[in-house]
Image 1 (cartoon, rainbow, N blue to C red):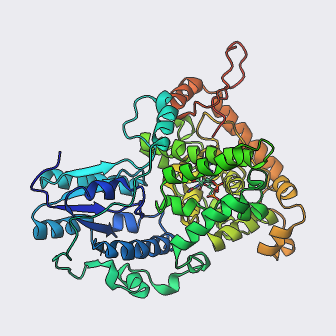
Image 2 (image 1 turned 180 degrees about the vertical axis):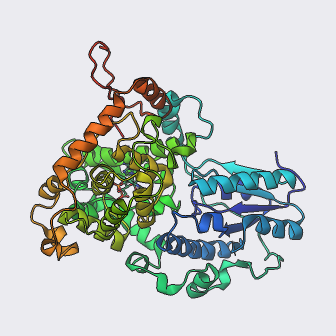
Image 3 (image 1 turned 135 degrees about the vertical axis):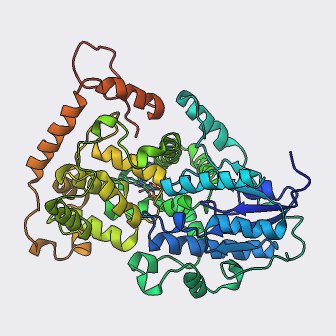
Length: 506
Ligand SMILES: Cc1cc2nc3c(=O)[nH]c(=O)nc-3n(C[C@H](O)[C@H](O)[C@H](O)COP(=O)(O)OP(=O)(O)OC[C@H]3O[C@@H](n4cnc5c(N)ncnc54)[C@H](O)[C@@H]3O)c2cc1C
């Protein structure tokens, strides 16, 4: 019910930087004067997993959103102080407002900030309405119903761009040095306001396009019209994946496009080719659609269990690798991995490519983590943080569960240790990718570890843990809470002591 005293609505923008299919903006536009706000609260903005490339991408998207909102007389404020002070500033001027945002499944820092804001709202008698923006369900009781709900949600119509009928005139909010309308800034000024020194730009930050909406539209149309051919086949190699994957992940991560509208676009495009059963693209469409489903499936894991960012999904793995300070040798190994100097030409080329571009395909991400976790036996927290900062599309809800899967610590997925030399043979047999990104590879020394011996050692330790008492019992609970229900391969013959493999689709 709308409270008659609430004349203002403040939309706290998070990872939802769009007008189309925005529950929060639509809700805000229902009656009140709408103000939008992006907070640079250091708990979020300077969190340990956030890097300059993420910030530049977000600021570019915000600038575009601001100029669209400005045309509808909706101001977008950027605040470079803590969020409580920002909200207090607005409360002092407006007397009262309604706070609206989307529900977010973010990193631990964002979760902690949300809790603080909840407390502040309660103390200040401010209603904070959080809206859903995908099929990640807060307080999900029954994982079995999740897929059904996904289908229901994704097939509902997308929300149109809202009309802000109460924003006819400009507002009279006085700004201060910490809280300013974004529209008055040039990009350089925004960088200064957001405390990003220009010399900090790395290659990936420099290559972020100025016009992100244009880039996003280009990626969507080129993907469906042209690049999706052989998507399923080409996605595994970094050489072909660069072109054949949609490359939409960074846009999805900051919510420039809603998952629902992308899903509906896939459905629409697929309808066009469905009549022709011989059209090979059908398989590619199915494969792409499945991945959109996985997106929510993974984020749901972090939503249901925020500790996944810090603790192994299956607790028996918690002390297997060293989570605390590393030994000098491990520190050296970790640095060599980060710098792309492990002596494995293809693996190093992947790391260098990722560093420079902010993206790499799924299989190579899995290989990078598998190597550092298994062959170097370094805890995934150290390596996962490094990759989080490099991935322009960093999405905690996908990232941490995936990092854990590739490190063998979920307890419900098969143990898979990638062999970088085999991957080289399969994905870059002519060394084109390797020579492009790691031209000096063959002048470097031999690998820093013996691949075969270290893989065997890791496999032995992981399986030994899986055979410990109560392992299966706990794994079943993990599966109940997080496992996919799409394909289940639990064998019903328990007499054999074969370790169970509970879920495959991940
Ligand atoms: C260790 C590791 C860490 C990862 N971290 C991230 C991350 O931080 N952010 C992120 O978006 N993806 C992550 N992924 C998943 C995947 O690698 C990327 O989504 C994909 O490479 C992005 O490129 P794309 O948009 O061209 O993908 P496409 O192949 O075009 O897929 C379309 C979309 O589907 C979703 N998707 C694809 N694969 C997966 C998957 N396996 N699980 C969940 N969703 C998926 C993504 O939203 C992606 O944008 C990670 C994978 C691994 C192995």
